Length: 280
Ligand code: ZEM
Image 1 (tube, helix red, strand yellow):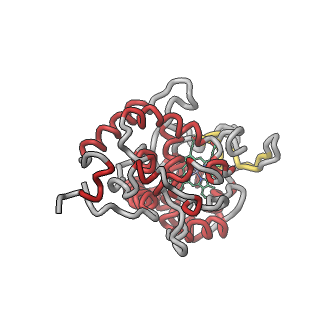
Image 2 (tube, rainbow, N blue to C red):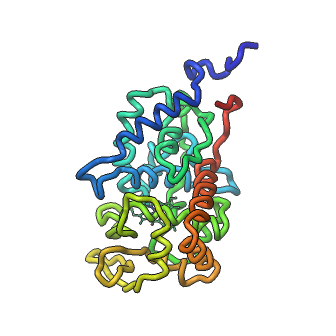
């Protein structure tokens, strides 16, 4: 039987080098003067996280496979507001490499600090076109920034993460910012929102956080100069001792944070993914 016969409708067999070329093309468009803090990296990371973070391990539904965020209701889930920009930024890459599936493109896009991306998903671009309504997860599976520790646990335990992994994943907020026209919250978490580091954990522990009510009524926490912010859901990490021990660990040791983040982010990107029989 000829090799890859089942995949012949996906075109020629792709190699790791093909995916590397896509990753390189994405890396080349990350710097964008005039957009936010000069990089589209953060919003691409948020796209990958929201694509994967709908996973429910009990029903084995949701996850990045099939790139279901292209469709309603997921596309218009309030939690995904603003991610149309991330998807649009990646369209020229898709046009240049039409053989890649959207799910692979979105998850390959950025994965700091290393690239824990585990290879192509089984649903190629052609199968992706046949994603049906039953494959699209219901809205409301992503975390609500206004809630506290028990909500955060409900959401991440549903995906299969433990407390340590949850805290590690939140270190992604060392990059990017909140936008009042997207989430309704405002500001960056760190002073260097385009640089991945453990600064987020140091700030979370050592800043005097002051509650602030925004013009739209949303409540967040800001430092005394109102330059950086935290969401109510994140303050849960210092109010809750089970979470706080990991905030302290990551604030102290950035190498432990980097290793834990890469493992947890890699696990996130794999949730619900049915691997192709052929590996790169
Ligand atoms: Zn976020 N996140 N997130 N997050 N997130 C925002 C932005 C970004 C929560 C949340 O409510 C928000 C994870 C977990 C959680 C990123 C990565 C990851 C914003 C601002 C909000 C409100 C959106 C806006 O206005 O543009 C909550 C409550 C979380 C869990 C409790 C995890 C896990 C992430 C990745 C591993 C990133 C990179 C951003 C910045 C996006 C940007 O456009 O700059």
